[in-house]
Image (tube, rainbow, N blue to C red; front, side, top):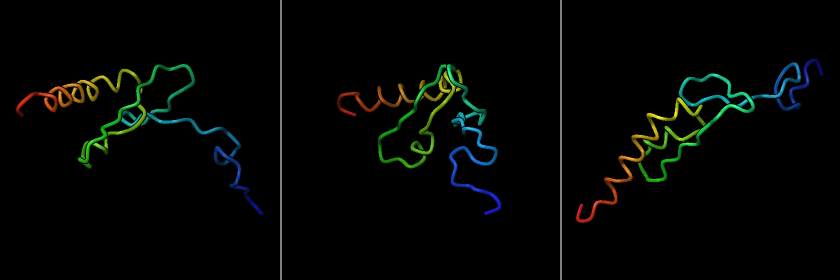
Length: 76
């Protein structure tokens, strides 16, 4: 076979790195990261689920905390 694509990491044998869900830049080993998970049924929020650089995740995690607090308001 001309090109063996069964090796993980793609052509060249380089290991693939995860990418930030926000800035789309590679997340290198040792960089601080955050995993964002919206578990409710809203597909628009679930589209934000993924791995982020720590700094890129801050605004989304702030919105998530606010939504979680609003969901836990008694009588709402």
